[in-house]
Image (tube, rainbow, N blue to C red; front, side, top):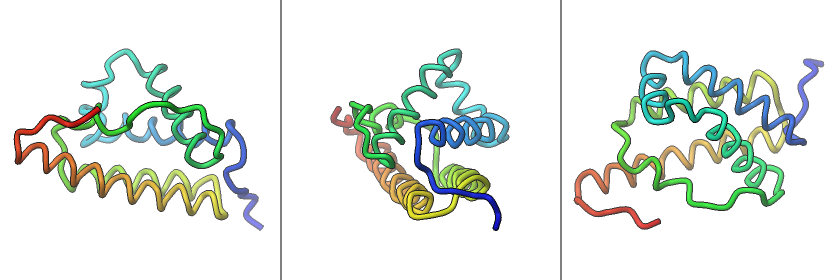
Length: 131
């Protein structure tokens, strides 16, 4: 027995999000982008991420908003999303296993693919993303 459980509580979400963003901030590719955009608003960003994942994984509706628009103009491409996903999967697998952990990885994969597709679309079509 490895002692891992599934994602069940807000404390699990907080552990996942905090550990993941520590890795993101330390990453040479992603860290400068995230720090450059978020600057000194990390506590607010983390709170928003707790609410987002609490809504998505625990079905406790605490997140209201559109996740894509703040990301629409980021200077990112496939390699950034590959790195992001590697860190996300690694963090989920470090602490959790079970259906919700699998869902967290699946949703991360889907979100990354959708965000990259939309970012490239807006970059190549001079449109403004809808809020």
